[in-house]
Length: 246
Image 1 (tube, one colour):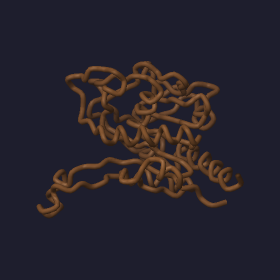
Image 2: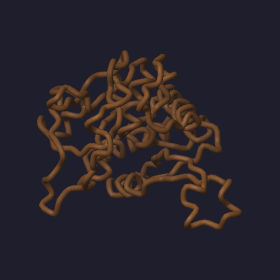
Image 3: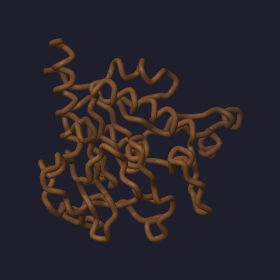
Image 4: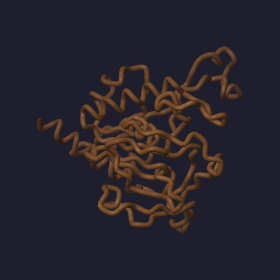
């Protein structure tokens, strides 16, 4: 069986943000930023990672993919869930919001498997009609460590909900890392809560049809191949096989 092709979203920044490394004549240009840990995690789990550019239409991109990863990044525009911006709202990337919403909507129409991480987790909740807590003081600037050499150390535990897809590959209490400025407020309709932190913060969501898995933490920075990436690769392989035989 051929390895599945899995697209990974990223950020687009002006080159002047890294002007110390670029000629001044290029500062008004932009560059696409993709954290390599996402791609490395897909490859380690047996998939072929593709770092996506928003210069092609969402439907044209999805036509070639077997799975989709919505990666971490900036805060989501509160206009998308009908809220006034908080005074401590972070930097917004509205073009990215629109691009990823189009990808997610297209993936839902195609029944394409989706893994959503951190910002992606929040985007999924908003896409399903949910809302966000725009500023969480104690999480601002928190670390996002990898596993220690002993393979066990993480920032905090989450309680995984029995009977969910997530519970099929994570233990009932699982250690995860943390780097997020926002959290889920109202859970979107059609989403199932799959993991909760001890303080009540929702850390995992799934679509009721089992095609979308979303986590607030950063599995790409944990020991690998991480179970969440094994899930997206396995589901994408099923999607690819079904597409080939139909």
